[in-house]
Length: 439
Ligand code: GDP
Ligand code: IMO
Ligand code: MG
Image (cartoon, rainbow, N blue to C red):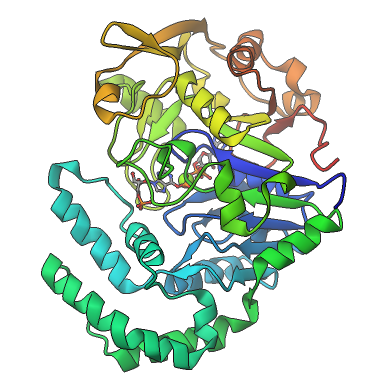
C-alpha cells in the first residue's frame, strides 16, 4: 500500500450548509476525483466562480473542475429525474459530465419515496422533522428493508421487471394506507422507465469502490465531499430530527467502499456561527430581530427548499462532538465576513442542563430543549472590509479580533483552522497550509 495516500475528506461539522460546496470546489483543484458518499439531492451546495453561481444537489462539486472524476458512491441515493436537471445546468454552463461515475450499488429514489416522505411527515404532526421531501428517508428505509432498486439493476431488465412485480404493488398498498397521492404507474410502465434510464446512463455506472481505490493505491489524490452535517447524522445527530444517512467520518468508508486506514485528512467545515433548517433542538438559536439580522447578513435561505434557515451563535459543544466523531484534522472556518458588523460575538462553550455544566453533546432531545448555552463573549472586528490585498497577504493581515476568534476555536478543540473563508467566491479563501493538501 502507498505511504502517502493523498486523501482528504470534507465533513459538515454542524447542521449542514456550512459551505462544504465552496471548500470542496476549492480543494478539488488538486484532486483527481471528488467522491460523494452519502445523502442525495436533499443537499444544496452553492459554488460561486466569478459571475457564475452553481447550485448542486446530487452531483459532486468536482463536476465544475474540468478533467476531474465526479463520483457518486454506493452510500448515495440517486434521483435520476432530478439528476437530469442538474446535468442540464452543468452542460448549459459549457461544462461536461464526462467525468461522472455512479456506483452500481447506489440506491434509486423513486416517485413513491417522495410521496411517502410527505405522508410520513403528516403522520408525525407537530413532531414533523421538516424534511426536504426529496424521498431520502423512505429510500434508505427500502435499502435496509432489502426492497430497494440499485443503480446497477438498471442494466438488468429482467431483474427490474421481477422486482417491480412485488415492490410496485407493495408500495401502492402502503401509499393507499397512508393517504399518500396515488401512483398511476403499472408494473410494466415502471419497469420500462427504469430500463430507459439504464440505456441512457449505463455508461456512467461502475464499481466505484474499485475505481477510487485504484486511484488511491497509485497515489492519486481523492477528495470526499460530505453532505448535510454531523448533527444530522442518523446515529450521532439530534435524532429523530436528522437525515437518514451516516454523515460522520465512518460514513465515508461504508459509503464509498474505501477502508478507514486510507482516509488521511478530514476537514471539518465549520461556519463561524450556526444555522439549522427544519425542526429539532438548537441550543444557541437566536430569536426575533437578532435572528433575522443574522439570517439576512448571511443570506441564510435554503438552496434546496428556499426555507429561511434558523440562526444562532457558534456552538463549540457541537464542534467537539463533530471533531471526536469524525477525527477532524483541520477546520475550514467559513462565513467569518458575515460577522463583520458585530461589537461582540458570542461563542457557546458548555450547556447548563438542570443546574449542571455539560461539555459533551447529549443524546436526549428533552435535555437539549432544557439546555441553556454558556457563552463567552469575544470582541468583534466591526468595520473590517475584505480586499484583494488581504486575500493575497493571507492570515496575518486579518484583523486581530478575527484572528483571536479563530484562535479561540483552535484552543478549545485542539484542531488547527487551516482554511479561512471570508466570502462565497472560490478565491475568497485563505489557505494557511500554503496549499499543501496532497503531500
Ligand atoms: P453547503 O451545503 O455546506 O455546501 O453550504 P450551502 O451552499 O448550502 O450554504 C453556504 C452558503 O454560503 C452558500 O450560499 C455559499 O455561496 C456561501 N458561502 C460559503 N462560504 C462563504 C463565506 O466565507 N462567506 C460568505 N459570505 N458566504 C459564503
Ligand atoms: P447540505 O448538504 C441542511 C435537513 C432537513 C431536515 C432533515 C431531514 O446542503 O448541507 P431529509 O430530507 O434529509 O430527510 O431531511 O435534514 N437537511 C439539511 N439541512 N443542509 C442540508 O444539506 C440538508 N439535508 C437535509 O432540513 O431537517
Ligand atoms: Mg447546503
